[in-house]
Length: 252
Image (cartoon, rainbow, N blue to C red; front, side, top):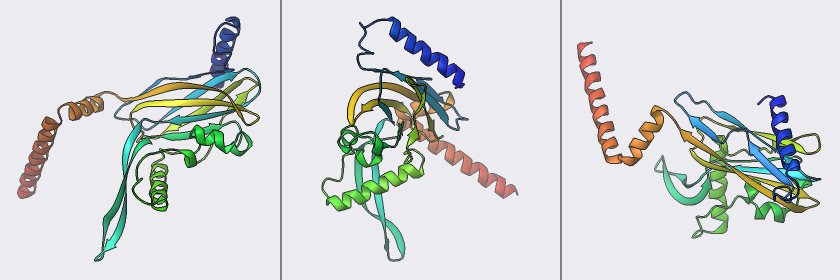
């Protein structure tokens, strides 16, 4: 979004809240936020997207934003070499794993708050809570959890670098979040924290929906609503394609 457009939007947000007087609860919380868009449509030519989160604070404090994707189960496997062949030997199934995870802040986290605040609010990959693997040792679970985060980071779905929250003046702030082409669909939640003097002063949340659109969406719904028919159709198409390829090569 153009910075001038952002400034007009944020200033309008600030003016509206100020003119409303002391009655609304939003300024009692000293924090208000919004997104440049609340829905992203994934079309066949989708190559990624970017969303601007902007807002305003009433008073001093640092802003931390956590943006996470829809929770999903993930199986992490470990390969071992057996008779000269690499095979999957061990696995742990984690649940409640965010499909996307990113953190942005107005200053380095170590300069903003305490570890208790970060742990309680799952701020930072080290504080991300997922369930699964309780039957194995703590050390073994930690290794699988680290592999899970590495895999997500390699897919650009977990951002291990801290994003920037930029202040425009003393009250208005903004932060950009980028999504890769392989971003999962579903409802995303942004949690915004205002921290001052190692204390959590205020928290606000907003949501973003990422959905499939067009032919891809139709195929996705068809595959899930009529999975047996979709599977039969896929097998039929594969058989026809194989038959046509055989005919073409025989004629060649």
